[in-house]
Image (cartoon, rainbow, N blue to C red; front, side, top):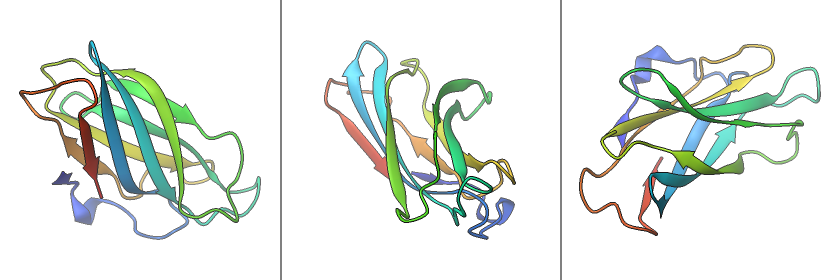
Length: 127
């Protein structure tokens, strides 16, 4: 993991905070991505509503998981997205989460992917 710029995010739990990430390579550029998010969900009026995986160098959106409901009693919570296509030459991805009030701005993680040895079942984790 490469730490995201620690001074560039708002640590307030009213902003969605990425706590950890797990990527599992499925072959052919396909990855399953699991993201743990912490947010001060307050019902439908204020809750974490999505997370995204981006090409860290270009900002291109590689995948997005829409979170369809609040998780008031489940914090942090983890949700997954399968079949995310990550080009084999891409070395770092950025994971960020948002809420329906503040948008993005909480803690993000930048995950370094191996340049060699990307085999089926390879796991990459970051906290």
